[in-house]
Length: 563
Figure 1 (cartoon, helix red, strand yellow):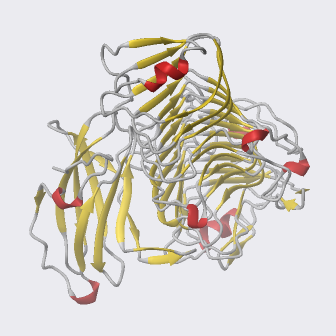
Figure 2 (tube, one colour):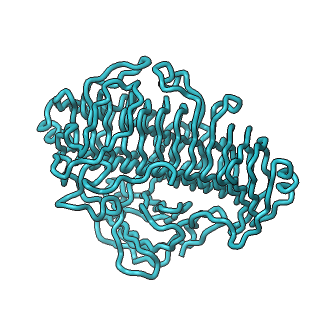
């Protein structure tokens, strides 16, 4: 079994529960795979990260398949194969060769057994079985003592708080505060707000552990630099100019935060002058760095970036991060900025409406960085910003309806290791907004795509111009047939706005704050039954094949934002 340290990191040293003898089949030599250590670092509530280091495999034909099951049960279920990640470097960061990937949509607090099979026809074939446990949903200690607090008694009660205590803040107005007491595993210190609690100012929670903030209204900022196992849930945070417009942030490496069911409101106005990196915008809605964070079911509106990671030399161990089921709108640079993700950031089932850029990977550092089942409407500039030499981005089952180019990447630098399946991309006539072009209505336009090592297929594409034009790497196309025959998109289909089960308007005026549309498709549309089966991603699809886009026809919409 995998050992787990106090940070929630599984140790590679004890990861091998069972291994077959490596195969001697194949030609061997530089083309054979030499298997290294396996690890499952920083499990989250719903996902496991899987890393398997290797050397050799000069011809890059090694594959790692994955099966999983709750420990002690049968049968096995298939997961996506791990992504092969060649050694590389970019923007001051480097990474070693490995197979890397995630197991999706697991149950919290559950032990799982994983069977990993590395197959290389040139030699090195082997199987390993590893185990890891997902994190439980954070909760107070059972039968925790509850200590009543008022604005007048807060300082004295806080000074004596012990692990396991629940501080119940009664109605009233409190000043911001610095929190300097930690709980322990199973005994968090909980600061819980009753109805009518308002905190004016900043909550600073630096280098602490196992502290929960619940149900607080904060007119200011929550900052948890360097802390571990912090919970921020069911809070209302209204950003203030006094704190740079930030809301919930850590500007130093933190671990395993759980940020859920919050309403986070910024100061940035939805206006042309606000758009872009140099626009008149302010503040980060939710910002993290470090591994293991879970950001889910938040509503984030009116920031420079809605949810973001740190960039450049400020980025620290940004992997095993979940950004799930959030509702993001009116953010003037990026809705979700997954920049400098080292690997296994999972941006899944988010709704992004009226954002300048929907999601950013600028850059992904080898990957995989997963974007799965996101519903994107009215991304003014681009839906996916894969810039600064981004490597290892994985786009599965996303729906995009936007002004201009449906899927356009104008990086000016190589876009490498891109893998896309079962997406729905719809665009149309474009324009220019605060100096940024939305494009001309091309359906797929990634001129900097590195074709070797990238693969796009089974996507639905369309434009209100009725033309199917664009470019993938060095290959231009001007018809659906040319797209199918001259690129990897051999199974692409043409779609239009009639594909949706309810009327969806083309966002012809992107500076409009459009209502959030229903982007579910009709069961008789061209997007139905046109996808590729993907284990652990579209299991249980109805019909002959999975439907394209974020939703299977007829299924209920996910819950976006607070539960």
